[in-house]
Length: 310
Image (cartoon, rainbow, N blue to C red):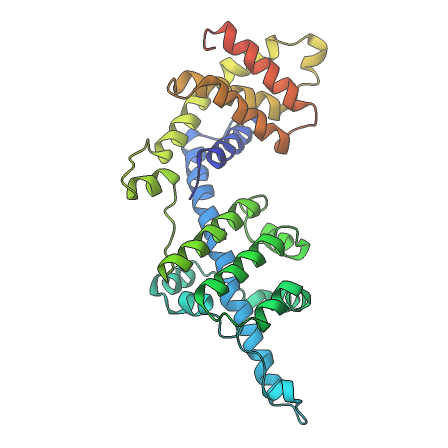
């Protein structure tokens, strides 16, 4: 599930926490790293759990309409495709999904207002109405509906983002990545007819496919450990590479990103140096200033050359 890019982001956040509070021990940092990794998979479960939650909302409304004092013909003969969609049924019937969501206390029960609002929005979508009117009743059609829902309805939902921020310190900025994982899970469900819990690391996925790869768990632990050990040296190197005037304006985020890039190049000689530079420049776009991209790229390139790494 977790690829190298998101693992680099998680490593960067841990080292940034250390840069801000150097009483943070390596043991504490690695524990926080592991918690952050598992939290991403918890968010995945939470987002997949919206499928049965929305399906139940639709079924509840259908029953309420049928019970009205003077129901309409549409109330008595509703379109049932969504309320009976196969994806929700597969999740609810899957013993692993049920066990994991119960164990981790993952539920939308306390967020019924959001479920209500999501369903209200869903009803206004032309593609949802086309689905209800469609003649293809199949698992594949249901999968396509949910994939479109995950693509279009959640990433910019302010109400959802507020709930995620309140629920976990690790969830705030990982929604786009997790939604992509949900979409891929749905694709697999359409092919296999069942849900499967994604392995935590991408290397585990490759190993299951008979494609052994270096352990991503070992990679990110080794990266953080090495960055801890070299932080004082490399941060001083960064500070000494800019003018005194610029030192006062040096952002901690940029320093941490450059330290991470230098550490990765030295610790993992099998990874092309240009790849490492590009990865940390990419992270700078989201976690630092508008000018950081050029600064991180230029200084990393220069320091790599000075150290004989490039």
